[in-house]
Amino acid sequence: MSNVSTCITYDASTSLIMMTLRGTASAQDVMNFYQIAQQYVSIYGSNKLLVDVSELTHKFPASDLLTIMPAVSNWLANCFIARVVSFDGFMHDLFLQKAKRFDLKAENFECFTSAKNWLENQSGN
Image 1: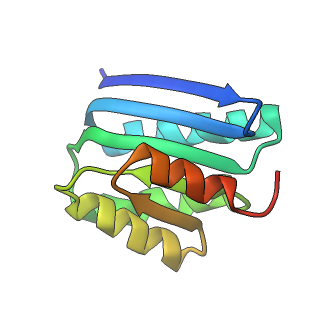
Image 2: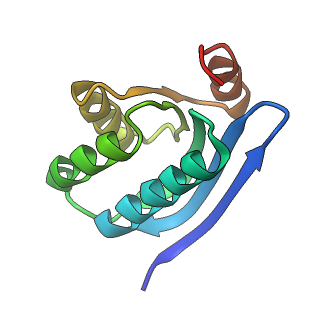
Image 3: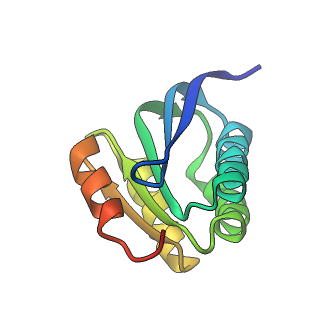
């Protein structure tokens, strides 16, 4: 059973999909979150995803990112992904490194405002 609180919304004024995750996540949880995000991308036609994982703890080995990233990169290939991360960010940094390896347009930020501003300045929707 997942130990994560999830909130996902769409802001039509900025064309942003915003997802906040809190708790402790397994590798499968992370895959599920990004699959849900892809469904929102499909429904709303947005290509901008803001994900707040600053209060999320990863409960899986770093090697699981090798399984996670091919799926996430397939689902969100045409998206800009801004991630709000905590200071304790080894897994967040590794996630970003793997995202770039799979040609995902993703960046990590320390605050919501910076992440949102970056997304609003990206071309697309």
